[in-house]
Amino acid sequence: MKTISFTTAQYVKIDYELAPAVYRVVASFLDFVLLLIYMLIASLFVEAAVFRFDAPGTNEFITVLLIRLPWFFYSPVIEYLTNGRSLGKYIMGIRVVKANGETAGLREYFTRWIFRVVDIWIGGFGFLAILLAGTTEKRQRLGDIMANTVVIRTKDTQIYSLRDLLSIKSQQNHEPTYPTVIRFSDEDMLLIKNTIIRVQRYPNDANKAFAIQLANETAQLIGLPETPAKRMEFLKTVLQDYVVLTR
Image 1 (tube, rainbow, N blue to C red):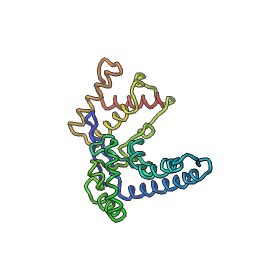
Image 2 (image 1 turned 135 degrees about the vertical axis):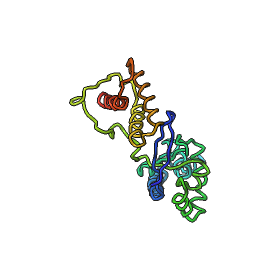
Image 3 (image 1 turned 90 degrees about the horizontal axis):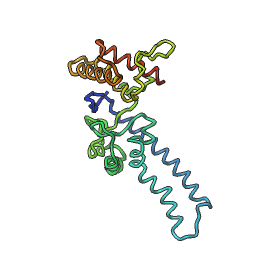
Image 4 (image 1 turned 60 degrees about the vertical axis):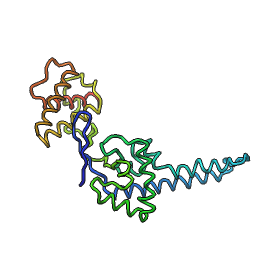
């Protein structure tokens, strides 16, 4: 399993699994099937009398608008609108991001799309794309290399939703200690969760120092006069309180 590490703005490293080539192939196939279904449905509408107009060029314009443009620009437009997930990628749980972990922009999506001509059509009907995605260090096809993007699995063990947190309790068996934690966001809690896991897995000085700093800032934000001595237990309690009070 190949992984890539991204460093957040808070200097926390989060590991993601790079999408295997087979996932990308299946996602592309699903996109093709779904787009083909759309084309068939759109063609039926175009052929219907309701779309027949007497004005010169109108019928051709409708055909271009409903069929040719979606087929041609589907990949970059849908990925831009959905932050790197085409329909096929969404189903397969993968996503396009910049190589530094940031959300890709329109330029990156169009660069990947332009090089599909080489990756897929010129490169032996996808053979080149599969070869590069399966052998390069970051599992990048040529379009990814030129756009400086990678494809990651979003259904990864390092990505946690609040429902995935360990030992989730309810108000029936857990009395919140810090009710002011509701001022935080889900992203804040995921940062705390990832920090706890990072310290447990890699208890080095850098991770411990960040956990201490995070605990101090958290205590300050919820109005405590000082940070509890057992900082890791404090962070776990804050996390648990948030889950109980906001679920």
